Image 1 (tube, rainbow, N blue to C red):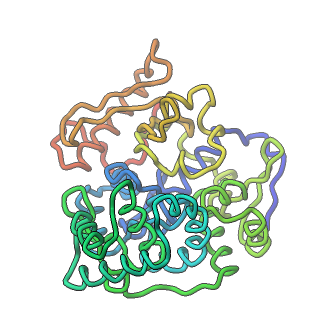
Image 2 (cartoon, rainbow, N blue to C red):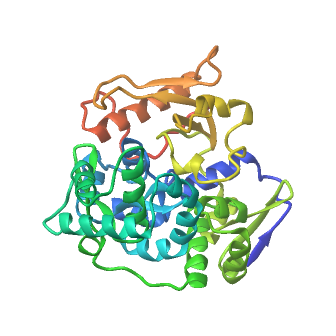
Length: 384
């Protein structure tokens, strides 16, 4: 382990830019969709359209069909590996991650399952009906719920979605290819044919190491919240892997990151004048328990209005969230509108031009024609 303390250049903006670099949002990015998802460990994905762009931002030159195709070919998978929330991740990682998290997640839902009248016998009946259905191929959620009903399992009052969630967390089912903007359901073993096996201590240690490499600088509490793994186990895992990490101290707190990312402190952290248009629910903001490093607390309600759980798309400048943006409804129109927190003065001219390049990149990703092409640059250079 290398410990670096008292670095006068360390600031929230520098931490934010180091995170952008670790996440492939500054610098060369990733070479393919599967590489990006593996490199990120897991990416928040309850909003399908948002995660398509979140992945695309990290793969220069990619298009929305590249990300959709990776889902269709099981090169990446979308499931509930942690926190009861959909994420995309590498298919070979899902089984061992579920082995670490699913029991605690299901136990935490016990009260809700009692309210819905779901017991082990019901789950077994639902599993049998589901496997009979998908033995002939992928099925829609509506078809799956009809199979549940035929097996005597009501799907009313969210009972169906909870049965589906349990079967996915137990590795019976998994979400498979896309049908429009919905994912079909398939048998886990048919869709994911190769899975890694890790015991709990080894799995948590690897998970933590990969998170800190892909999200660092981050704290042990960030990982514990993000993964849903108790802090005591997180600290035990950190003791095993900290010799492969760098420790930074900022505001009295230890932050951990990869040596490669930490080396940027000597070489010069890129992106001081970068502007990025990130998706809603992007890991740059959602991947941490403490978001105040990159988002001023007084603006938090502008990202999640009324605390409704729906995160807006964000504008990031110099490693800090400075506003939100709105994309065209339905996806392929030309209207991409910045909404900076400083609405009176708006974006400075250079930042506005940089944002327009990001908007062109977004339209290009969706397959729309655009007069402005951002080329291969990651986060065009401009002052906020």
